[in-house]
Structure formats: C-alpha cells, structure tokens
Image 1 (cartoon, one colour):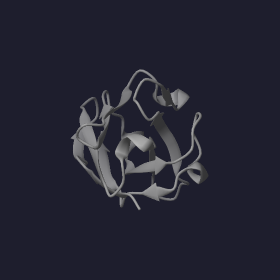
Image 2 (cartoon, one colour):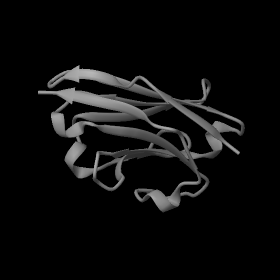
Image 3 (cartoon, helix red, strand yellow):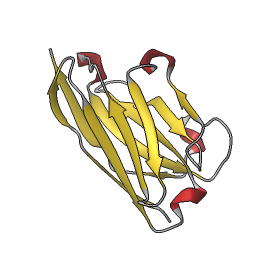
Length: 124
C-alpha cells in the first residue's frame, strides 16, 4: 500500500501561482511513476501530468504545457506540481496518484493509489 496526501491547494487570483505537494508513505516512493489529475465540478477527472520513477521523463496535457511543471524528490518521498499563470478554468480538485507500471501513463486506470485531493480555486 502507498498512502498519498496532497497539500498546497487554496484560493488564488487569475495569473497567480500555486505549488502542490503530495507526500507519499508506505512503500518505496522511487518504485512508482507518479501523476497529477484534476476534476472540476460536473466534469470527469482529467490528466494533468506524469513523471517517471527517477524523475527524468515528464508528460503533460497539451493544454497545460508551459504553465505547469511536475517534479519529484525521491529522497523526501514527495511529488510536486508547480502551477503558474493560473486561470479560472484551472479550478478543480487536484489528485496525485502512484503507478507500478512503466511507460507514459496518462489515463487514470493506469494508477494504483490515489490521494484524497486538494482544492484549487482560481478567481477571475
């Protein structure tokens, strides 16, 4: 089992920045690829970004490239999502997830463990 706890969400004005964190515990963090997903009210959960086990390969949703950056610190068992130039349409609950699989993992069914989510609200 891997336990994931997100933090760093909150209310921010459009154009602002937030940095989300996801603290992992339970198993060896570096054995898992990690991802961020988000779910806005009334919408399906959508892929945001993923990073491989050692943090050298990243993939982003096309619409978010250039604004969001995923990273990880395996020594601290922590995943990050730096979000810049935030827009009201970025408002959602953001989830981190862990996967035992390899490859480019952009769909939620590839992930085995999920955090409880952290709310991000961007005001206009």
